[in-house]
Image (cartoon, rainbow, N blue to C red):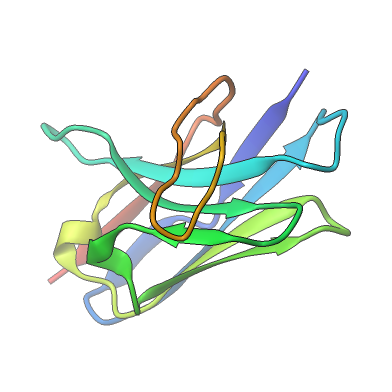
Length: 124
């Protein structure tokens, strides 16, 4: 069974940085994709970024382009989300999930497994 465990959240001032980690286990194939989505209080879930393990294709939603960077450490089966220039509107619980196909323009959020989330709070 697939397990995903997020870590790295916390409280940071606007303009600061955080790096989230998603430790993945249980995949029977080395070809899979991981995405980060977030949910703020009272708001709908929002897809943030995705990455494919096979060719490292990445996707970013417009609001984080140029500020966030997703990466894959195959040796550790861990996906990182480096978040820079954080804004108050980035405040949310961030979840990582197994997703479907990843292209530079779209991430297919066909989610079967996701973690428990990690809270990111950005103070203005």
